[in-house]
Length: 469
Image 1 (cartoon, rainbow, N blue to C red):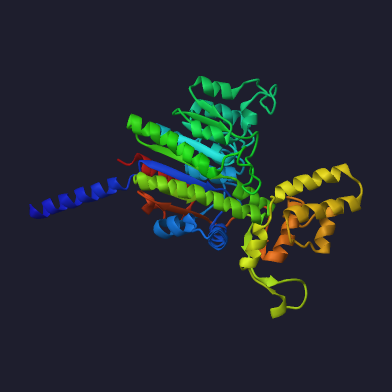
Image 2 (spheres, rainbow, N blue to C red):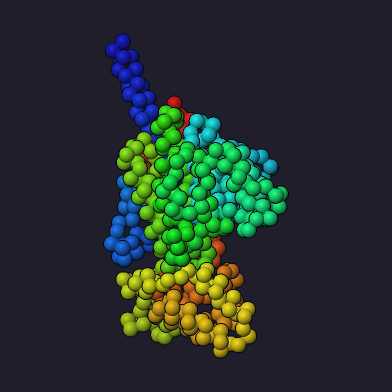
């Protein structure tokens, strides 16, 4: 009898301990296009230039749990965002371009759908159009990531408690300025009719007075942090803070089962496509600032699980050492990354995407190579101080020539190579790579995230945490 009593006590303790690992709230901080190399760059640059710790590595990875996940889609070794996010959301592989819809046409429940079923409140926010691949795959279904109207229609039906980001264009009819909907429907007004407070400026984030929030701050993507006007566009950390305010306030009032918040920085992925190290650095800092907001919330609400992850790696980010130029190797011609190189890129004042936009607009206005060359020098002097472009790369920019078969963002990728030659921040591609993604977690339930796994396991683990008794 004594042995039975001890065994029953042990079972009770284990059951209690298991129950204690269940998070009430789950915050998924999603840096699109990033993995270990980007996070390590964020840590090093933040310490050297901002004299600030990097919470992703120094807190979540160092004090929590950490794992790697493989990313191939149902039809390709190298995934796109739609397929990767769909696998992480549903637990099933899908083809590139599909939104939580399997190759045989099935639509398994998404993470956000499952969260609502379990009684949790839900929030989605992104620096991309909110109907973009990752937030869409975590919440709704579509045969193609380009089915923007369909995705927005499903948001209205799903009714997330918080929905914030860019992308007002597919919430408005084409008859209105900035609208692109062909069905004539004003979805912003439809959300208002459902009781949502609608906001469109950073200032309005300070005046939230509802438990249902729709925030759309641009027609399409929100600007990179390096280009962001703080009077026009909120930071990621401001959006996360506002979302937590809305989700937690209602949770406390209704004594429900907590919430799940999906918060994405898409700009880290876009910077990877452009091979833009300066934009990447600032958006990694912006992402980390949002992670710090989540960790502060966790301190006051210890039943919160904080997860930091992404969907795939973008750009083959490869900081390295080498020669300063094509001269002979040796100590006098050796280049490695240190504070001088970081300060050089810290001095850049414009994203490569914005540089490309302005340069191509000027190229359409003139047929004079001398005038275009002078304009290039003006852009470099004003926005990329102390950057020197070798003659071979200058010629490619002026002639709008190709760089390599896997460089698809021009002339951004060309200027990026000039930056790499001077700083050591090289890139292998302008596309995605199959590098395993990192998943770091801290808080109740984080013990599930360790080892090496498939990205479909992400969905399985979160459902286990949501539904366990």
